[in-house]
Image (cartoon, rainbow, N blue to C red; front, side, top):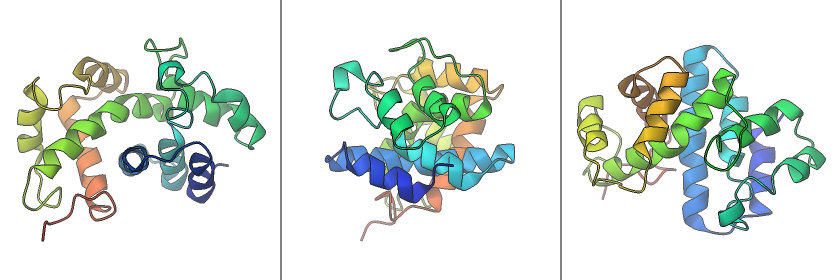
Length: 187
Protein backbone atom coordinates (compact mmCIF):
# COMPACT_ATOMS: atom_id res chain seq x y z
CA UNK A 1 0.00 0.00 0.00
CA UNK A 2 1.29 3.44 -0.96
CA UNK A 3 2.53 5.47 2.00
CA UNK A 4 2.96 9.23 2.14
CA UNK A 5 6.71 8.78 2.58
CA UNK A 6 6.88 6.68 -0.61
CA UNK A 7 4.63 9.15 -2.48
CA UNK A 8 7.03 11.96 -1.56
CA UNK A 9 10.03 9.94 -2.76
CA UNK A 10 8.32 9.19 -6.07
CA UNK A 11 7.16 12.77 -6.72
CA UNK A 12 10.72 14.04 -6.15
CA UNK A 13 11.89 11.88 -9.06
CA UNK A 14 9.73 13.79 -11.56
CA UNK A 15 9.07 17.19 -10.01
CA UNK A 16 11.22 20.19 -9.11
CA UNK A 17 8.85 23.17 -9.06
CA UNK A 18 7.85 24.46 -5.62
CA UNK A 19 4.30 25.34 -6.66
CA UNK A 20 3.70 21.72 -7.75
CA UNK A 21 4.88 20.40 -4.39
CA UNK A 22 2.61 22.93 -2.68
CA UNK A 23 -0.32 21.76 -4.81
CA UNK A 24 0.52 18.16 -3.89
CA UNK A 25 0.40 19.08 -0.19
CA UNK A 26 -2.94 20.89 -0.61
CA UNK A 27 -4.50 17.90 -2.33
CA UNK A 28 -2.94 15.56 0.23
CA UNK A 29 -4.55 17.48 3.11
CA UNK A 30 -7.94 17.68 1.41
CA UNK A 31 -7.90 13.96 0.57
CA UNK A 32 -7.18 13.17 4.21
CA UNK A 33 -10.29 15.09 5.21
CA UNK A 34 -12.45 13.23 2.73
CA UNK A 35 -10.99 9.88 3.79
CA UNK A 36 -11.98 10.70 7.36
CA UNK A 37 -15.46 11.70 6.17
CA UNK A 38 -15.93 8.38 4.36
CA UNK A 39 -14.34 6.30 7.13
CA UNK A 40 -11.38 5.31 4.94
CA UNK A 41 -7.61 5.07 5.49
CA UNK A 42 -6.54 8.71 5.91
CA UNK A 43 -2.81 8.12 5.36
CA UNK A 44 -3.42 6.12 2.19
CA UNK A 45 -5.75 8.72 0.68
CA UNK A 46 -3.25 11.44 1.59
CA UNK A 47 -0.51 9.52 -0.23
CA UNK A 48 -2.66 9.16 -3.37
CA UNK A 49 -3.47 12.88 -3.23
CA UNK A 50 0.18 13.82 -2.85
CA UNK A 51 1.28 11.74 -5.85
CA UNK A 52 -1.62 12.54 -8.22
CA UNK A 53 0.37 14.85 -10.53
CA UNK A 54 3.33 12.46 -10.85
CA UNK A 55 4.06 13.22 -14.51
CA UNK A 56 2.68 16.77 -14.73
CA UNK A 57 5.92 18.79 -14.68
CA UNK A 58 7.60 16.60 -17.29
CA UNK A 59 4.53 16.21 -19.51
CA UNK A 60 2.07 19.08 -18.89
CA UNK A 61 0.44 18.68 -22.31
CA UNK A 62 0.25 14.90 -21.98
CA UNK A 63 -0.48 14.71 -18.26
CA UNK A 64 -1.26 11.19 -16.98
CA UNK A 65 0.00 9.53 -20.15
CA UNK A 66 3.35 8.82 -18.47
CA UNK A 67 1.99 7.69 -15.12
CA UNK A 68 0.66 4.14 -15.27
CA UNK A 69 3.73 2.06 -16.12
CA UNK A 70 6.27 3.93 -13.97
CA UNK A 71 3.97 3.81 -10.94
CA UNK A 72 3.16 0.12 -11.39
CA UNK A 73 6.91 -0.55 -11.67
CA UNK A 74 7.44 1.53 -8.51
CA UNK A 75 5.16 -0.83 -6.59
CA UNK A 76 1.76 0.85 -6.64
CA UNK A 77 -1.14 -1.50 -7.19
CA UNK A 78 -3.68 -1.24 -10.03
CA UNK A 79 -6.31 0.43 -7.83
CA UNK A 80 -3.89 3.12 -6.67
CA UNK A 81 -2.78 3.90 -10.21
CA UNK A 82 -6.40 3.91 -11.40
CA UNK A 83 -7.32 6.42 -8.70
CA UNK A 84 -4.58 8.75 -9.92
CA UNK A 85 -5.56 8.32 -13.57
CA UNK A 86 -9.25 8.94 -12.80
CA UNK A 87 -8.62 12.58 -11.85
CA UNK A 88 -8.12 13.19 -15.58
CA UNK A 89 -11.56 11.85 -16.53
CA UNK A 90 -13.01 13.56 -19.61
CA UNK A 91 -10.11 16.03 -19.54
CA UNK A 92 -7.32 13.82 -20.83
CA UNK A 93 -8.59 10.25 -20.50
CA UNK A 94 -11.69 8.10 -20.11
CA UNK A 95 -10.91 6.56 -16.70
CA UNK A 96 -14.21 7.24 -14.99
CA UNK A 97 -14.05 7.82 -11.21
CA UNK A 98 -16.00 4.99 -9.57
CA UNK A 99 -14.81 4.66 -5.98
CA UNK A 100 -15.07 7.40 -3.35
CA UNK A 101 -11.26 7.68 -3.49
CA UNK A 102 -11.35 8.33 -7.24
CA UNK A 103 -14.32 10.71 -7.07
CA UNK A 104 -12.74 12.63 -4.19
CA UNK A 105 -9.47 13.17 -6.04
CA UNK A 106 -11.38 14.30 -9.13
CA UNK A 107 -13.32 16.85 -7.03
CA UNK A 108 -10.52 18.25 -4.86
CA UNK A 109 -7.79 18.71 -7.48
CA UNK A 110 -9.27 22.00 -8.70
CA UNK A 111 -11.14 22.80 -5.48
CA UNK A 112 -7.94 23.10 -3.45
CA UNK A 113 -6.70 25.76 -5.86
CA UNK A 114 -9.62 28.02 -5.05
CA UNK A 115 -9.34 27.30 -1.32
CA UNK A 116 -5.65 28.18 -1.36
CA UNK A 117 -6.22 31.38 -3.35
CA UNK A 118 -9.01 32.48 -1.01
CA UNK A 119 -6.94 31.70 2.10
CA UNK A 120 -3.96 33.68 0.80
CA UNK A 121 -6.08 36.83 0.76
CA UNK A 122 -6.91 36.58 4.46
CA UNK A 123 -4.71 37.98 7.28
CA UNK A 124 -5.15 34.73 9.24
CA UNK A 125 -4.83 32.57 6.13
CA UNK A 126 -6.94 29.46 6.28
CA UNK A 127 -6.93 29.32 10.08
CA UNK A 128 -10.22 31.19 10.50
CA UNK A 129 -11.76 30.64 7.08
CA UNK A 130 -15.47 29.91 7.15
CA UNK A 131 -17.37 28.13 4.40
CA UNK A 132 -19.54 31.20 3.75
CA UNK A 133 -16.54 33.36 2.80
CA UNK A 134 -15.15 30.57 0.63
CA UNK A 135 -18.45 30.17 -1.22
CA UNK A 136 -18.47 33.89 -2.10
CA UNK A 137 -15.09 33.40 -3.77
CA UNK A 138 -16.24 30.18 -5.42
CA UNK A 139 -19.23 31.94 -6.99
CA UNK A 140 -17.02 34.77 -8.31
CA UNK A 141 -15.90 33.32 -11.65
CA UNK A 142 -13.16 35.95 -11.98
CA UNK A 143 -11.54 34.82 -8.72
CA UNK A 144 -8.99 32.01 -9.29
CA UNK A 145 -10.37 31.91 -12.82
CA UNK A 146 -8.09 29.08 -13.95
CA UNK A 147 -9.74 26.67 -11.48
CA UNK A 148 -12.50 24.82 -13.33
CA UNK A 149 -15.67 25.20 -11.27
CA UNK A 150 -17.66 22.90 -13.56
CA UNK A 151 -15.20 20.08 -12.87
CA UNK A 152 -15.50 20.73 -9.14
CA UNK A 153 -19.29 20.66 -9.33
CA UNK A 154 -19.16 17.46 -11.37
CA UNK A 155 -16.83 15.80 -8.86
CA UNK A 156 -19.00 16.83 -5.92
CA UNK A 157 -22.10 15.53 -7.74
CA UNK A 158 -20.30 12.20 -8.28
CA UNK A 159 -19.87 12.04 -4.50
CA UNK A 160 -23.55 12.92 -4.01
CA UNK A 161 -22.52 16.03 -2.10
CA UNK A 162 -22.86 19.79 -2.42
CA UNK A 163 -19.78 21.88 -3.23
CA UNK A 164 -20.07 23.70 0.10
CA UNK A 165 -20.01 20.41 2.02
CA UNK A 166 -16.97 19.03 0.19
CA UNK A 167 -15.23 22.41 0.44
CA UNK A 168 -15.92 22.59 4.17
CA UNK A 169 -14.38 19.16 4.74
CA UNK A 170 -11.33 20.20 2.69
CA UNK A 171 -10.94 23.56 4.45
CA UNK A 172 -11.10 21.95 7.89
CA UNK A 173 -8.56 19.31 6.86
CA UNK A 174 -6.26 21.91 5.32
CA UNK A 175 -6.36 23.98 8.54
CA UNK A 176 -4.41 21.17 10.24
CA UNK A 177 -1.58 21.78 7.75
CA UNK A 178 -1.89 25.60 7.59
CA UNK A 179 1.80 26.39 8.05
CA UNK A 180 3.01 23.61 5.74
CA UNK A 181 0.57 24.90 3.09
CA UNK A 182 1.83 28.46 3.59
CA UNK A 183 -1.68 29.40 4.71
CA UNK A 184 -1.05 30.23 8.36
CA UNK A 185 -1.36 33.59 10.09
CA UNK A 186 0.78 36.21 8.32
CA UNK A 187 3.50 37.76 10.44
